[in-house]
Length: 346
Image 1 (cartoon, rainbow, N blue to C red):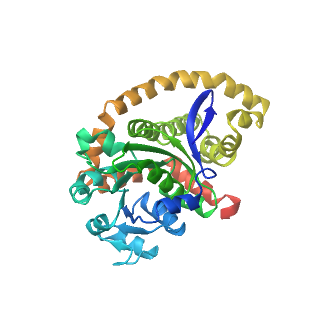
Image 2 (cartoon, rainbow, N blue to C red):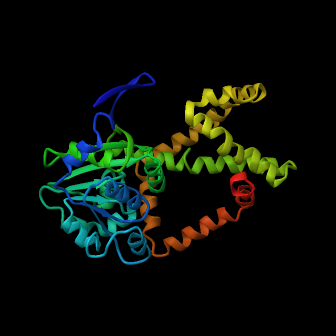
Image 3 (cartoon, rainbow, N blue to C red):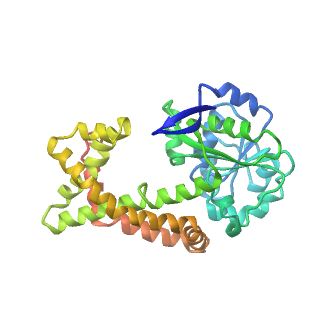
């Protein structure tokens, strides 16, 4: 494991150079990797592992998602099974179900966690809040690799020869091989590099990020600016371009490549001055909200809210109503038109 300095703090990371794919294949050569759940992370991780030469099967309930697995080349009775049969066959059970589905399927998974097996997660939720989920494994390796991105992008970047950075953790080492299994799986799914964490830290930071800058806060910020521009006479297309399109198409690639200072340096002096002057007030306004959010995550309130909401029988219908409201808002209806006008879509 390499020690790298991140902004003055030393952290442990694993790179492909020190843990190459050939080593990962050797570590897992006698394993049957059972991907349980083919929804968000399942396709990306399962297909990447399969393409990299690992022995992979999928466990999925009948329905549209099962049909998607068939379309992706998983063969019923050979590499595609019921959840129970896949759990029975697998030596490494990759639990990639939604957090709510993990709770409902736990009795099925648990009875097949026999000595020598490993239980793998890509999120610390079920273990960190085991008092709420009931997920308490015994006598098996409990490990995690958490890609820092969606399963869709994990697959896209893999096919482009790139990778998604992932965190890793070992919660329980029953076999003495938990760490090497974890790292081999992390390389196998196509991680760019792996950085060390714990189930607790991953769960709390992940829920904070999703509700904060990655999803919740970004929508709130974009909508606030769009509304102010519209309320002051700017047209929908102008408000959208100045709020969203320029950010996603022009500015984000700059700071993704070389950092925020690089993005600032490649904008006009007027933009630079304004950004430097206003980043402080925005920070001061937003940080108390993030602190409130973090406290709500850490104490388990957000986990419980997720469990209560996502286990309702009409969850998907209510979710679609909320997503429809977003989709049909003026800002995102404007965005749909703007996207059609991009040169690559013309």
